Image (cartoon, rainbow, N blue to C red; front, side, top):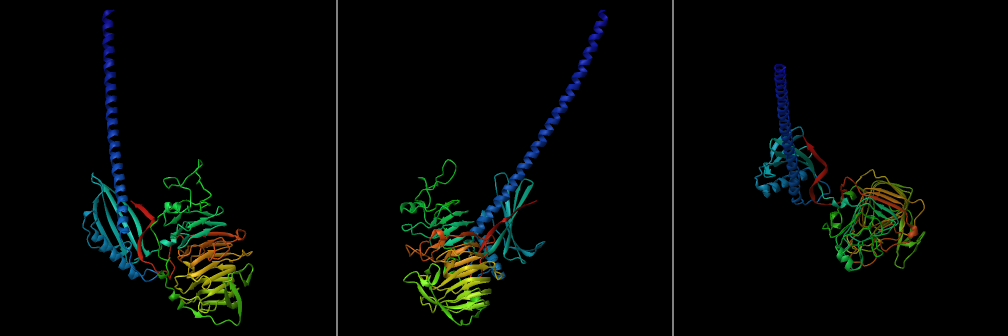
Length: 539
């Protein structure tokens, strides 16, 4: 019995050793697998980090390139478009600017001639600049091709270890069109009221805080954008002309639901997205009479013959009757009357003070006026009643430090149907003219105006039912006048007064352009700006 028991114990011991060896092999294999997996994960993690660092370096290069472009001075220009030769000259000036700055402490060589899938062009390269302390860097290429001289392509390549990432973005060589970023840009104060919706931001250079705030917005109007002014919040508050309710740190006050608190003394009673104070833009190109040259339009037009008869009217007039003055100082006008006629590339001589009834205009309508005069025989107050416009209205530039809003006026009554086939950048280009869209005395039933493109005037008033797909530029500096001379959006009264009868208000919608292209006739400098929608990561 003992012999058999000893033999059984030996067998059991041998079995245990085999199992132990198997488990040892399994554990060793698992350990090797885990170590290998961990090592592989570490490698992947390091690679991912290097890839991210390379992308961050490329993004830093884009920011670096933006600083270079932003420090580039604008190029003086007397034209209203960028020609091919001007674009090439701007590129040459940009190259000189980049090479002279010594950015990043690296030397920038002259551009080289290249020929790739985009065609022939020039390449300006900036050598690698360190991005971090671990070897990350970025390098830049600016590309300028012969077949598209108004475009500069940026390539920013970031590297880290063996990884590289590339980001590209386009820049445009174009006229300074910053003014078109706004739905309304004015050198005077503005009253917005009635059923008015503005789908964009507004801007005013009005600075007489002791008299008025730059903007008044009634509770029934909405600005889907910001209100932008050159004065400070403290200036307005100290003069008792605050636009919004602010706390002790000059920040807007909100209630528990996140709504802006509106106090009775606020001049902004309607909805806005916010107010930007102390902005440095000042007078942008397109807001000064010296920014305009409309002579090229005039040269294309033929003089309109004198009408066979005239009609006496007054401006401003009593409600519903153009033949009765509303003020003792109303201007008496003997209007040349044109009915049911079509005019193509036509010029209205000064002193006609015409009335166009049911007329159609093709191409250009050019309206003449003299400077430095208030004589109605040398100016033009023109009324359009139920007219069709298939082109653009352009005027001469009556230069005057005191706007003759009664003498130089474009007055649209009834329906004004604008279907501009001549140019999409502007519908009315009337520097220093008083532009009145809608009746100055009452809202006419069935009246409506729809315009596409910029509307430029000395003082621009919009009343009644109107939609403007463009920017309103009201360029007359009203700061010498404590009262009156207000850009009215909604009120029925004229720009020479403070407001009108709220019962006369129609529906107004203003939508600024997306392409931001200046119309011909507006002179501005040439600048280089980024086209943000072209940002792209390239593998």
